[in-house]
Amino acid sequence: MKFRPLHDRVLLRALESEERTAGGVIIPDTAKEKPQEGEVVAVGPGARDEAGKIQPLDVKVGDRVLFGKWSGTEVKVDGQDYVIMKESDILGVLEGTAAKPAKKGSVKKAA
Image 1 (cartoon, one colour):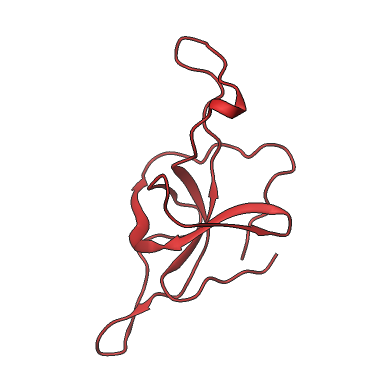
Image 2 (cartoon, rainbow, N blue to C red):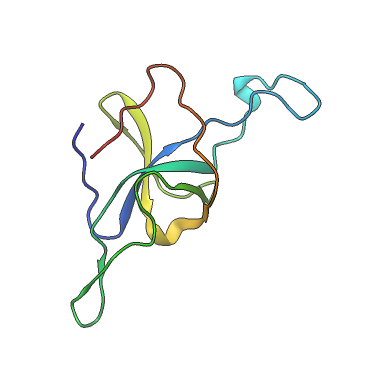
């Protein structure tokens, strides 16, 4: 897959939420909340400032980020579900954590 977001947009793969609670109760798919955590798959070059210079993005491919529950637009690329949003919709980067492994056969990384 080749996909390059434009300007200050970011393509994210939403990470699956836990299937069990801390007490061990299994959560059915219908009761799960929409993911608010994702892995950055592709980033745009950045937005232009008032002088016309491109301001690079703070996030990079591979970062694990938190975003608002209803942020972004869900898209399907090559049969896979992604979320595309502006960098300003990202609430923060989770540092020192590795992204949870994807379910078998779920996502191919974008370049």
